[in-house]
Image 1 (cartoon, rainbow, N blue to C red):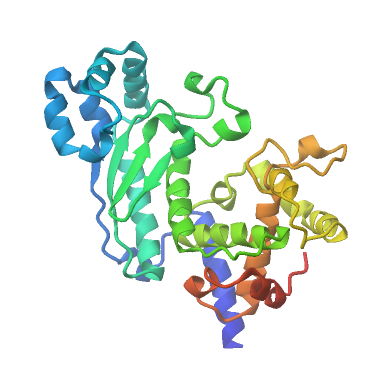
Image 2 (cartoon, helix red, strand yellow):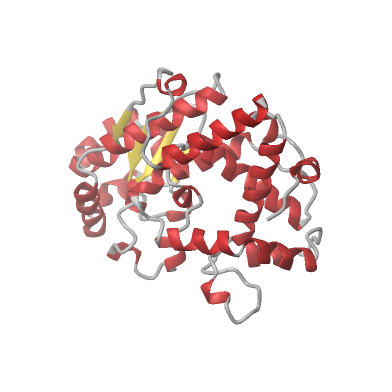
Length: 316
């Protein structure tokens, strides 16, 4: 009875946080103070006379591959100046993001007490959306020019399925993913099922770290996309099972796990499906495993996919 009571309370915690209830005191009281340095602001106000001091202050941001002339030209480059202006409009301050990151790392330290809270440095990086955040041991770099809003004109030409998440609400989600990736083991088994469960483990960790975040945001879905996934979960799983969840065909990754505008069942309704639907199924398998087994989060994240699936009792 106690086990099920704990599971019930845990599920209610997730539900309540989605509705805006405060973080539990045992997490909220963990001391976390994040230092945020606005390199983007400092660079936007600098001139070539300031280059030497900036390089001394931020040596990790100035690659030796680029000569000083490159950086000096940046100060007066009209495109860079427009980026500076647009970032300043959207991020006149970083208070909202700082609070979200502090809440994130409170959760991380609850599960990983020895985790290092990094120094945060915000930059602009020519809208390099493939590296929106970089999390090192003691440093977190965030490219603010990739979070200006899904309809920003900088993102013209970028596929909508990617730019729809170029929003400030996704900053802590991307950081949570970066940390989850560091602590989640991936087995050498290349089967589609193992790949789904690997993605599901990361998503489950992210949801555990982001209890105040709506579930659809954690999955980088819209509310409508998550609704579709929930309503069709049984049929999606049946489709996978009728095929072969143990296949090692790499095409299954591009069809159901890799970023894409929609999932590719090769059926008439494909355009109505959200992309990466296999991640959602993997997430639901992991959720079922955690509900039916007394396992710590950090233990599950290093557990092999075969064990998780065998004990998940997954029945969509």
